[in-house]
Image (cartoon, rainbow, N blue to C red):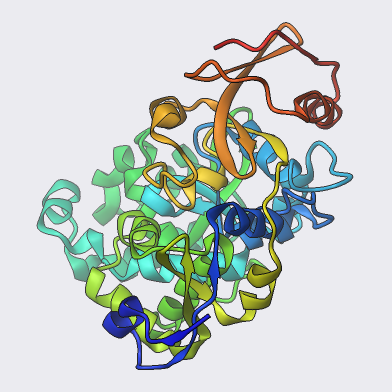
Length: 386
């Protein structure tokens, strides 16, 4: 190893000099597999898994979200996520890209502070569409919190409670719009989260009385915390990875992002991964230095955080040959941390496929058996399709 100052750190952080760790991508992904509880499979609770991943997307398919969590836990049970939501160790809220995510209360507060900072509800389009001026929002937020003080309500019930006051009468359809667009600023500002489904209908619950809700931190505190959380979960991370997560995901400006990386200072450093400079947290350097390539095979559900964290454009995780299928929601076959195939299950049979005439990875049968145990039903592996 040689001592030098990373060009990446020169652009975004104070001038530190240190020996730069060099490692290969297979080793780096093996470290990340361990961090995610995928190799070896972890012993964490559902809430601990979600905390490590920062967030778990749950809007399109809650069952897939739970499978993604349980795949990372030894000895998990059906309903673990629902129980964590019920006991308050997890919350479900509108977060990245406005979609529903599972997060711990502390992590949600940090990232919602970033999303709220954009103040989207003050944009001219929002003001004209909802006939609300910026100074109308404090009283409206208070009315929503008061309506939810006694427990979860459906969107229709919340609309009826709030619009009973004449000045909000025009907002009835905004509260019940299936897109839930109008509800999101209330979530971002810490007024509400999603409650338990009632007869298949979404409910909303107040956060003011949530025992684990810490309130939104100041933006200058939340920003560096969000940067460090991401790098610890998805490092070694590039500037593009970080922008995908916080700029595209939460609307953080690039200038803010660069400033927060600078605030992190020597808690972040760079490593060389097959010649590419990437950020890592200094506390993870020893683990990265000891990492060795993994050949672990894992069956992950669609839209799993393994690919959503770095983004499907990261070719180190999602090769171009499978990116289109991954983006469309295919279930994932990981080999050593790389999406090598996709899988489907029909009639108790798991079928994997890829875009090349490649043999099935060793360990696939064992992973199908593990999936069957998680799902609680027998599964067979079919002939692998090209």
